[in-house]
Structure formats: structure tokens, C-alpha cells
Image 1 (cartoon, rainbow, N blue to C red):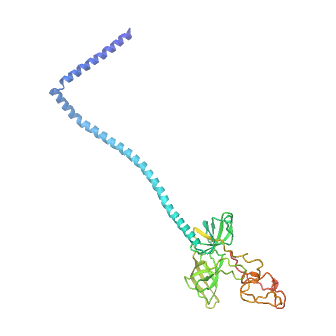
Image 2 (image 1 turned 90 degrees about the horizontal axis):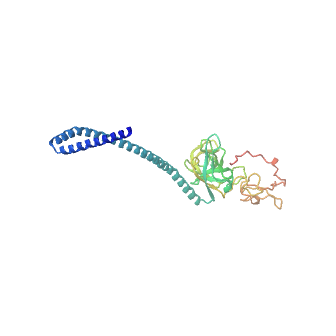
Image 3 (image 1 turned 120 degrees about the vertical axis):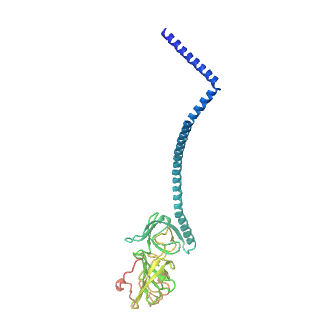
Length: 358
């Protein structure tokens, strides 16, 4: 009973409110065209306009700030992306110089190989050791599996002498540079043919020694390999003739001495070369003589006693005995005019030690 009564009261209130609103609406519609309504509307509008303006301005300002914050965040993201792209492009641009240098070096080395009278193998330097406290050397990216052997001569793209291979592994080789103090090469001035022994030094310059004091050495003149073996050895020259070694930096001569010396600046790029050429068809140095060529060298054209059918000695010509190169003796002992063999080492004067080519 109470529930039914409460429901009826709720319905009665709803209808009462609806009727009141309806009467109010009809009343307002009736007075809307009156002057009083217009005056009230004007007053309300006048009062509401500043408030509306302020609210609109505040809303516009808040909207602008929000838009700006959104824009800033988007611009920050785009800026980070552009920075990354810029770094990538800068890295690529920085690499272009190195790539261009590699391409130029490769072009030079292949062009040089095509113009040389030797068979060569292009190689790339992978380790550089030019410290002053140990052997000056380079390690290249080819070894015995590529047909390289110790003793082969190495030059740069300009044809200048770099050094010789001193050791090989299956995939790498070590080059002893001509600037190393242990390296020795016989060189001569290209114009005057003044010949001397050239050694490396700690400073990186080359020292040319034992040059006849009467020979002419001129500053800035080129020095090339003489193609001659070291004095007192039976070796074929470790280096083919005519390879550029360097240019004369200074000359030191004493009028009272019988020899003079010079300082040579190497022409090869010993510290910054990227690609080099290994001469593979020239074999010099130890073991290059035909079998049976032993003993101390005999100057070409000088008489050397050899066994003859009549027991007399006859002079050797421009070639050594038994097909040996000029300056090398024969494996057979020479015979003195008395008929006694003179090949006994105890009968020979001992020669002074000579430098060993690397």
C-alpha cells in the first residue's frame, strides 16, 4: 500500500512540474515580442558579451598554447630525425674521401702495373710498422698461397723501390722497407753513374756510402738501383736495375778521403702507401746462381786460372766458368801455374765480412 502511494506521488510531481514548465514556456512565448522582453534581452546581452569575449579569448589562448605544444613536440621529433639523417650523410661524406683515395690509388697501381716490364702482383697494405725502435716493415694481404715468396722486390705506383719481402705466411707477407737500417742496396746516380752502397737509417733517410770521391754527386739528382750484387758476394743483384730509390738530399765529401757519401730521400711512399706491386718474375739474392757457382767473385775480364787440356791457365771471358754469371767462380778448384790446386780455403786470404741483403 505504501509503495503504491509513493508511486502515485512521484507521478503527480512529474506532471505538476511538466505543467508548470509548459505554462512558463507559453507565457514566455507570449511576452517575447513585447518591449520589456526586448529590453531585458538587450541588458542580458550587454552583460554577457564581455564575459563571452573573455571566455572566447581564454579558450583561444588555451587552444593556441595546446597547438603550440603539439607543434613543438612534432618539430622536436622531426628535428631528431633530421639530425640522424644529417649524421648519416656526414659519415657517408667523410667516407667518400677515403673511398675516392682508395679508387685513385687502385687506378694508379693498375696503370703502373700495365706499364712495367715485369710481371707484378698488386697487394694492399694491412699493417704498417715504421717505428724507430724495431724493423721498419709493412704487412700485405697476400702470401704464399698467392704465389709470393721471400726475396721478391716491392715497388709503389710510381715505380719507386719500397723494399723486399722478408717473410711469408699462407695469406700475408712482411716487407722489410729500404729505410730499415738492416737493408742494403747498391745504387747509382742516374746521370753520372756514381755507384755506392745504400743503407736505411733510423731517421728514415737513406745513407749512400763508399762512393768514389772522383765521382760526381749532385743534389736533387735521382738515385736508381744499379742491378749489382754486394761486393764480396756471389749473389745475383737482389734488385733489378733502374728502379728509382730516391733523390740526393745532401753530399758529404772530404778532399783527403778516397770515398764520399750522401744522404738520400726515399721516393717511395713508405708511410702512407695503400697499394703496392710485388715483382714476381725477378729472382735475385741468395740461391739465384746456377748450381756449381761458388767461391769468391772474379772481376769480369780478369785472368782466372782454370784447368785446360795442356795444363796451362787461360783467362776467363765476360761469362763465368761453367755458365756462371760474370764475377762468380766455378765449383771446380782453380789450378795455379805450378799445377797445384789453389782452392784450399786455408790458402786463401780471408775476406772481410760483407753486409747481407735482406
